[in-house]
Each structure stands twice: as structure tokens, then as C-alpha cells.
Amino acid sequence: MPRQLDQLPADTTSMARRLAALEREVREMRAARRMTAASVGTLRVYADDGTTLLAELGPEAGADGGGGLWTRGLQDPINMSAYLSSGELQFRPVENGQVAVPAGITYDSDAFQYTDLILTSGNVASTAHRAVVTLESTFEGGNPYVYVQGENSTQCNVDILGVLTSANLAWGSVTITPSAANTPTSATVSGLSLKGSTFIGFSGAQTAAPGSTTLTNGVTGTSATSVTSSGLTVWLTRQNTSATTVNWLVIGI
Image (cartoon, rainbow, N blue to C red; front, side, top):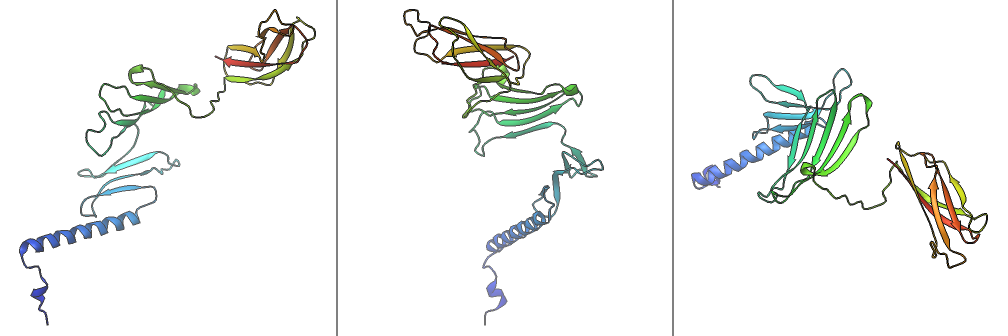
């Protein structure tokens, strides 16, 4: 029958390794149990012993209904908690030296005139410019702004993989049948609701004979007048009375 001593490691080095592995497994079990018991939506960071709470991050739920995040760290002699009012998060790959400048998310506010949330890309060379997106709101209900630019106000290209829509742009087509040859004839476009204070209109006929004076069926001109936020008047002149499609565009600025 094996003795109890026969079940122990043969040397002190092996025993120390097994003891260290056992301690590590106990810490991991404690940490897992703590995370299981943690409140939903709250991040808690524990020390290596799996028991000592180092920091917490979670939603604030005060008497006014809460809102935002609060943090708590182990401070001596008391725990300190605070709102995340302003600050910066930075990101980079795990491998050192892969990105010269890290990416970041920054929130800043003077609690009176503005609030800014700034998203900044990293870059792989210290001399390159980062792309910056700034979301800004202003005091007393002013219009918020979204700024897209390179770092230090340098050029930043925007590539949209899809259809661009904007509340200050409208476009379409209208069919105009001239009342007589070589006589300007108009059609009214209405029902628009464009943003902006000044409005510019453009028009162009769908024709294979633009401005022709030698053909008997050429379109000699189109124009746009009475351009407003709600519509415009489109004009066509051609050398016969054929119905013609005219494309139009309105831009509010």
C-alpha cells in the first residue's frame, strides 16, 4: 500500500511549482465567481487574489433617475467614486511598435457652451495625419455640428459606399412639351422642403442635340428660376414641340 509520503513531489522545486499552479487556479476560480455575481452592466476589476476589488465602472442610478457612468477605485483611506465627465480612451494593437500614434476617443465640455466627442484614428507613421471626426453641440439649442477633417485641419477624404442623402439637396426630372417651336415653356416643381437660407437651381435636358441650330429638332436651352426651399420653375426651349425630359437640381446653402 503506497504511503502518503510517496504521493508528494520528489523535490522542493516540483512542490513549489505545483503549489504556485494551485494558487493560480484558486485565484481564477474566485475571479470567475466574482464576475458571475457582478451586476449586469458593471465592470469590476479585482486584484490577483481574485477577492480584492480594485476598480468599478457602471451606470449611475441616482435620485434623479441616473444617467452616465461612474467609476470607483480603491483609494486610501476611503473609496472614491465620480462621474466620467471628460477624458480620453486610447487604443493600439497589442504588439508594440505596430502603430506610431494610437487611436482615441475624447469627451470634453465646459458644461455651459459646448460638448465635444472626438474620434481620432491612429496612424502608422509619426509624420502622418490622423483622421478626426468631431461631434459638437452648442449652447442654447444651437445647431449641432459634425466635422470631418485631418489632424491639424488638414485635408481628409470621405468615401461613401452607398447613396448620399442630404436635407439641403433635391433633384429629379420633369417632362416639358413646348407650346410652340423656339418658344420658352416652363414646368413647376413643388413640394420640396429643403434646409438652407439661399437656394441655387440647375437644369439640363436629356437630348442628343443640345444647343443645335442646324437641326430642326435641337434643344436650344434650359434654365431654372424662382428657386426656393419648396420648389422651382424649369424652362425649356427647342426647335420643335417634342416632349422633353429635363433634369433639375436644387442646393440649399
